[in-house]
Length: 473
Image 1 (cartoon, helix red, strand yellow):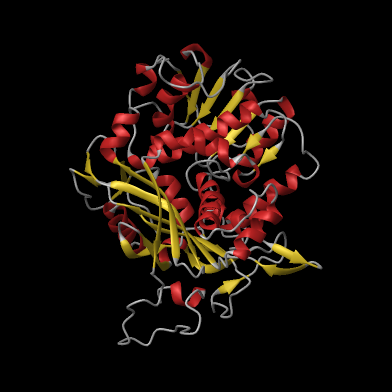
Image 2 (cartoon, one colour; image 1 turned 90 degrees about the vertical axis):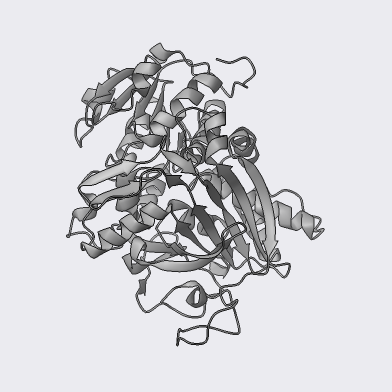
């Protein structure tokens, strides 16, 4: 470990990493850098061989063994003991089953999204609601109801979900400071919701524009992305989901409620990669993003809900507005044209990225001072200088993982927690060195600004912050 790097925690036992795609490869050098880890303490379990050579470079034990339903115990039992850490970066492996396994054995756990078993999204017997992130989250919350203690499991802790919840809290505090509001830093969900309400925040976008460009352009029948292709396509083919705000007056014709759980979110009867919304980032300006389902759209909306006499009096509308790299947009266009069938080839770009950045932040709208974007501007060259085997996209995710792992090691007996539950200041302190330029920018953008009157699109001219105005019809 380099002496000039801070140690965020110590792993006394073993760390098992599930999955070894772009994020797994990206996090490895920083695990050694910041957690005092020795190669003998780390084992990777992944469904295929390591074609990257990263495991061999760092002397890591690597098992090319696919985890399948019913095989968790036989594969993981020889590798994990009480007090060890399971870092789940896999796809198509049930997060809930892994959480149950770790809780029974006293193993710490972290993942970056809630995954089901392979085949879940193709099961035509499941309703759209059952295939949603809302349903997956509710299942995890149901498991934790009577398990507020036990080995800590930090769920959905990457960049977004994960850092997005931290950025929202920091953005709210920045706005309160800028408007000279004398407020103490909230220490519970209700106080954060009261602050958002006081600032008149009606809508929150996780607004992201990835401009990274590869030296080799996308080919026919190839999906190109800056992170997991399987992960992106699977979440993109889930129904679009959004936290549904208390200010909304126009119910979407293709929307539905789930009818159980927190009722903080709704879903649309169409996939996220077929649903576009208007959004804005400071460098990109206005853009059309994909309303892809993400856990933070639900958890942030849920945690920023105010109730009086069991009635919701305040909640913002919250959702992702994602413009991936240009070749990924072309890849999505091809997937849609093939009736949502994924290409036979896939390529995650890394070393061949020539230029670009990932502008990832949260856009808070409704306040009289204007829309406020707060987030990370991380360019590809800076990402490479900060950590090997990283792109701008992967390093933002890894920064969230590092913060979540450090919190779990310091708080090992908290049961299942979401990003909204943990110490946002600690996570930000640890993540910030890997996020490039952290900036907050106000703008006068609204989804109605400079809209052409040539087309008869539905809109609400009296309230720019209605979802009706954001949605691209």
